[in-house]
Image (cartoon, rainbow, N blue to C red; front, top):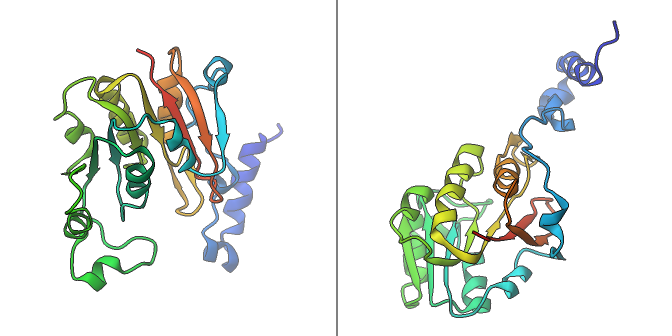
Length: 233
């Protein structure tokens, strides 16, 4: 009996593991897209009729109404926060993070300043009254807000399926009707980290059998693209 193609790929990579170059790069069948059970349902064409493609993740901020209430889940150094503050000029920007990380991406901002993540962010935005810094798990912090509170939320927190799913479940109550939710790293696998992501599956499930609209898709050189959704309740 002929071995299925995907099984052939798996056996091929298992056989190659004895070679040093495979051990060096830690190649797995997943690297060829072998694992596809994490995709969720396909997006229906009706969700894409008003979708516009952008060259980077900052450009879709032009779609967000000015002087509104915004939130960002996953802050890092506040680089995306800076763009929200500049382009949207929100009435409030709620910056939600665990604030328990070391420096990101090989930088040494925290270390060189002698501050931890939380202290560094607080110091950076200490003179901006629009900024509200919130520490904790995203879906737990979001529960502290009234329903129908936010006009725009940018989601770049936990990337595993269960965390994104929990964020979405809460956000669909906390976002206003016709509000906008943007998701960073819309994919099922991170090549850079060689690990599974659950963003694509959770977002596709959110869209399935709904009236929500994908209004933007923002490209990234890393292929960790953004998808932007207008919520219709």
